[in-house]
Structures are given as structure tokens and as C-alpha cells.
Image (cartoon, rainbow, N blue to C red; front, side):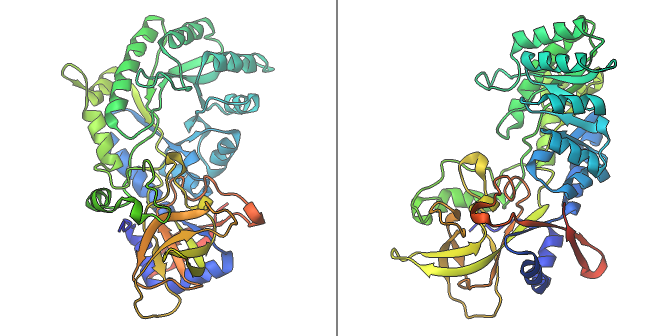
Length: 445
């Protein structure tokens, strides 16, 4: 079993107010996403506490691509942090939420002229991915009716990722610095950026060391880099580490999946480190002889920027599916059909699935009837399976019951959502709680 870790406030709501859950689904349909901004703010404060503990200059940019919730962007603004945007639409949403334009950083390699134009006009920070983007940005600046200047970071491609299509290698990065000295009237150079896949802090530390060499090179050219943005990839926990280790050792074999196939890889659902612990280890990692990364940042007065996405929305949403029916299959397996599809509870980055056990809310009291079942969506596609892994239920789910997936804000609930079969997109509600369990829900636009 992979019992989910659950925020205490959300756990109270699920356990003490099942009738409210059913009423919400009846009113707004299935699947239904409930967003909890208080969790976002708790996660933000935890990371800021680490950065303040080490007294390093810092900037947090919420990776808005992790979730489409406007309430999350409002929580970022309320917490006083910035936003990392990858489209003009995310830019407009961040501004609408109240994030100051100067606290917005734009990443992504395929920025359009309209996106560049909007960023320049707003005075937001632009991460330049390539020399080609540099030229494009320069052309947009030159086309302005009045003198304009773009705030920029140069994106570095670390040595550990030589085949990546993102960022610039050493030669191009040095060329980019030369161009910045040549076009000082058009650009305000603020520093460097990189982003790596995976969740190890060691790889970030090595890339950080590589970038600091370019900090020195930039200074020798008369430039004044003030920031190193290390991207995102801070890990979170969905389940207790010991439960996850037990699953990998004992329960992760083909017989535990309806299609007898074990996914090739997973997100580290029960990793050893939380995001604050990861950040602590990064700051304490050696930069050079006798000097930690935190020491380097302090001595050089360099701002450490991060772009957390999943780690800021940890525990900030749940996704609720209503059961349509169950069906016995010829191979003695049971399938649970729900109103909703696999596109609304996915782990797409890893060609995998969302592994966490859903919570069953029964509409009526029934005797225990232990059941193993997999969970399928409402489409006509045989591959529309939300959970291939056979889930253990103490009581067999019935039509009208609810299955709740915990902690779905980090890409799972809306990255692949669509209107297949003309089903409307799932509704999203913002949850707030006052005293004595007075939960309130409002549309999240």
C-alpha cells in the first residue's frame, strides 16, 4: 500500500465533512479539483526560512507551469515571492494575481515576439536560452518606438547535460557576454541561469561551480552579474520513505499491475529529503576549498534564485472522482470506472502513473468486502487507466462513491486535461477555512 501523506487541514475536511465532499461533486461534477492555498504559503515560508537562516541573498520564482490555478499565483503574490513564467498567458495571469512585474522571470526557449515585447514593456526578467534568442530579443528591442532595455539572464547548459537542447555551452555563453558588452544600451545583464532534470542537489552544486567561473569572466569584461538562478527540481514526499522503500522492495512486481507491466521509472514518491532539507544540503555543499555555496553567495553578494514548482504546491490540491460502476473481468480482476479520465491524475513526465493510493469515501455503510481493483477513466480508450496498479480496498467501491487522490497540484491534475468526448474540463475550487472547521469554496479562475 502507498498511503498518502495528507495535510492536517485537508485530512480533517475529508474525515469530518464527507457530506460536503459529496455535495460539491454533485454540484460541480467529476472530477473536481480542490485547491488549498494555505499549503502553498506554508511551503514558501519553509524554503524562505532556510534561505534566511543562511543569510544568503535570494529570490524565489514560483514555477507557474506546475499548476493552472489562479489561487496559487495569488498565494505567491501574498507570500511576496516572484513567478517563473513560460508563456505570455502565464505572464498575464501572474500580473493579474498581483505579482509585481519586476518579480517575474521568463524562461523557456521558444518565446514569441509578442512575449518578448510584453516582458520588455513590463520590466520583467528574461532568461535568454541561446544566441538565436539573443538576436531575436535584440530585434524586438530595436523595433521599439522609444529607447527600451531588457533585463536578462544568460542560460548555461551544464557539462552534465551535453545533449540538452536548452541553454548555451561555454563558447556560446562567452559570446553572449561579449554581445552584452557591445549592446549595453539595450540590455541590463543580471546574471546566469541553468536548469537540470532529476532531483539531486549534487548536480546543481556542480553546475553552480561551473557558472561561477563565468561570473568572473563577466566581471573581467566590465559586466556586473548579480544572480545565479538554479531552476527548480526540489523534491517532495507523497508517502513515508519507509512505505515507499517497502513498496519498491516487496510490492513492485508485474503481478501487482492489471496489465502485468511495471512502469520503467517513477517520481521519487518517498524520497529521503524534503525540499527544505535539500536546500540546506545545497547551501552547505562545498563550492571551493573551505568555502560553502552559502559562503560564496555571501562573499560575492550574489543572489541565489530558485524556481520551485512542484515543491511549492506540495499538498495544495486534491482531485475527486465519482465512481460510475465496477466490473468483474474474465481474468478475475476488477475494474472501477470513474467519471473522469487518466488525463486528470497523471504523472506524465515519467511515462508512469500517479502511484498513490486513492482514499475511498463510501455513500453508504456496507460490510467489509476486501477487493483488489484497478481504476479506469470514462473514455473509449483502452489505455485510459488512472491507476494500473491493483489497489486494495477494505470495502468494494460502489456507484456514487468517491475516490480522492491526495496531493495532485504538482502537474498531476491539469497538465494533460482535455475535453475528449466533449466532456467539460474539470472544475477547480479554492478552499479556505475559518475557525471551527468552517470550510468555504469558491471558483478558481
